[in-house]
Amino acid sequence: MRISTFFYTIKQGIVNIWKNKMFSLASVATMTACIFLFGLFYMIVMNFQAMVKDAESGVAVTVLFDHGISEQRIEEIGELIDGRVEVSRYEFISSQEAWDYFRDIYFDGNEKVAESFGADNPLANSASYAVYMNDISMQSALVTYLESVDGVREVKQSATVANTLTDFNRLIGYISAGVILILLCVAIFLISNTIAVGISVRREEIGIMKLIGATDYFVRAPFVVEGIVIGLIGAAIPLGILYVIYGRIVTYVAEKFRFIGGMMSFLTVKEVFHTLLPVALVLGVGIGLIGSRITIRKHLKV
Amino acid sequence: MIRLEHVSKSYTKEGLPALHDVSLQINAGDFAFIVGDSGSGKSTLIKLLLKELEPTAGTITINGRKLNKIRRRQIPKFRRDIGVVFQDFRLLKDRNIYQNVAFAQQVIGESARNIKKNVPKILSQVGLAAKYRSYPRQLSGGEQQRVAIARALINRPKILLADEPTGNLDAKNAWEIMDLLDEINRDGTTVVVVTHNLEIVRAMNKRVIQMQKGVVRDDGADWEDDGPVYRGGQVSTYGSDYFGEQPGLAGEESAADGFFREGPFLNQSGDGGGDED
Image 1 (cartoon, rainbow over the protein chains, first blue to last red):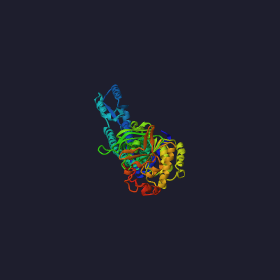
Image 2 (cartoon, rainbow over the protein chains, first blue to last red; image 1 turned 180 degrees about the horizontal axis):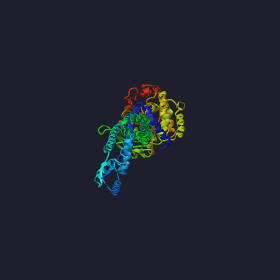
Image 3 (cartoon, rainbow over the protein chains, first blue to last red; image 1 turned 90 degrees about the vertical axis):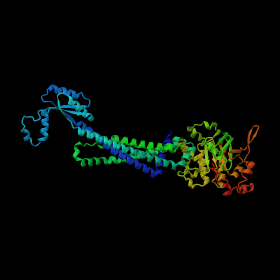
Image 4 (cartoon, chains in turn purple, brown; image 1 turned 180 degrees about the vertical axis):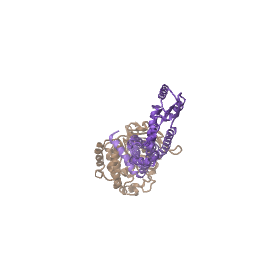
């Protein structure tokens, strides 16, 4: 292909959009809405995933031992825990450490009350392993296993937190996938409609082109360009909007849901756009490409 | 060279064929008219030559290529060797004259540099160099047809097909267009003109192929021992039963003084002209 042909194709594609303003505008608007919602859901899912990850690494399973267990047995249990693939790390917390930690938190400012315990450690039997997991969905399996281990008195877990987070994340994933899928279909339909109008407006020109000896490529390419440009504009606008409003949304959400604020840690706009930008652009171009291809196949038998 | 061998074309299975067993040869460098009334098969013939339609039977050879051997993908390249001009000009209304002609070169992927060189040259050849920035609606019919001819010629086709090129023009413009086509022919391009305009046909004194109801009544050639000899401008051999039926076209005399008269005479037989098929 000659360079002049390439530029001609690009130019004609853009001219098509301009000549066909109302339909192009409708397509761009639909694309914008589609990609905007996509971006919004994408951001929510990404943030939730990050939060779940955080929560996962923060949630520990606590393993308490039988009374009077030997140091050796504790070490053996430690090795058993270490052998599990779902465990990322584990640490031993002696009863003294447990007490120190507890005292710091609950007797803060009431050191006198704490001192009344003297050398007696009320948590004398509370030596434990804190087990951190790399896959929270395996938690119940691990707990079942640990409970069966000899020398383990009790396994404490925060299953509800982990499960709720995972379930919620999955739910959002499904809903957004559904909404996005519908929107994608609408966007493809609208773009293909716009291109169809463009083709019918230019029927005469296409007829002349064919008589002069234009190749299929030459006749079709401008319409593909038209679809792609509409897709790109329709992706660029919502990306710009999302970039600007992301910070505000995060601030708003953090304020409104302060009661669970401890669990909330939001990604920065850069982190989100690192993947959202290419994904949304590819999506826009893809929708434009598919939309125009469908129409060309249907209406432009050259 | 254009050669048709026993070419037939039917649009429907039941109806009469639009073309029936047409055999014809137009040599390279020739100038030939094709005349016939509505439904005679002229337009079908043009479409067959451009491979817009496939013949139901027979073979067509153009510039040494059998059309039925040309694959779909090769059609564009094939058409670049044939320039076409229509009664209704078929210019792009939203582009100026220069762009309309340049368009034909862009289509075949000519370089921008060559386009800049070729377009003014061909526009001056058709006498429109000064109006390259005008839009079609700002031009007269004759000027628009010149643009169409420039567009058809810019890719240097071997054959120029003109389907009723003067059908929408007044007498003066019609003659100017015919002179231009004649000049193009003298430069070596094969020119085939489909027309109703018998005055022009007679005056041009070129070979005349007469069609009626899908068959060639007379291909304008007499076969001598050393090949065909073309009779120039003769349409009278069957004039009595074809042209005689048309009011206002009966006599030679009335035709002569109507020659440069705009209006019913020149266009009279053009009703339904270009699209009879």
